[in-house]
Image 1: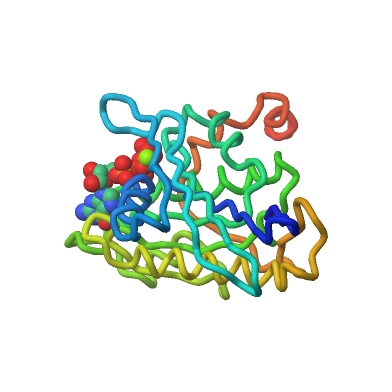
Image 2: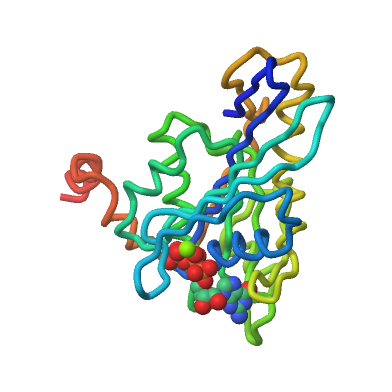
Length: 240
Ligand SMILES: Nc1nc2c(ncn2[C@@H]2O[C@H](COP(=O)(O)OP(=O)(O)OP(=O)(O)O)[C@@H](O)[C@H]2O)c(=O)[nH]1
Ligand SMILES: [Mg+2]
């Protein structure tokens, strides 16, 4: 939920980069940091393992300029994509205002992409947020690689609902990254509206009506590693 501070004339938005492990979330934040003038950006904090996998999160604060007399601050965070880091992902989603779903466009990443879509849905619900009303942008990353999935096929495999802004990108080469930022900020600001008319503190910034749901096709075996056992029991009992 965006934080509105009237005395300081300030709005803070929290945008979380979510998606499969090694999909390019950290690279997105590094590219944003590189391409922003120093006076607009804060320090990029990353907490990695030795193998450069995000262990906890990446954090990048930025100033966007002013909107209706209010300065807009952005907090970008990325979650660790590794399956085992689920409690950290839930923590990072606290008070989220918008999500960039970073999709790895390679065929071999299909199962990991599917997993991360379902995992995002599940973790937002645990946080009490309706995933179908949260501002969202889908970024198809790694489009610089040869042999990546055709865009229509990728969209259909992941069941991306209509109306969600989609951006093609190569976070490594640096294109599509700033466009993604603009798209998610537009989605969030559209729901926030005029900050002067909003109450002080955390305000709701959800779509008034839910969009269609994601409908990823394909294997989901990994989800069973995360769903608590008691939630799986009824299905198992039915089968038995
Ligand atoms: N070819 C190509 N490689 C990319 C792109 N984006 C990221 N990579 C590479 O993919 C690897 C993983 O990138 P990260 O940004 O660390 O991925 P991540 O999503 O943060 O991974 P976790 O922190 O483990 O969840 C690195 O070697 C990147 O250089 C891209 O657009 N194209
Ligand atoms: Mg990372």
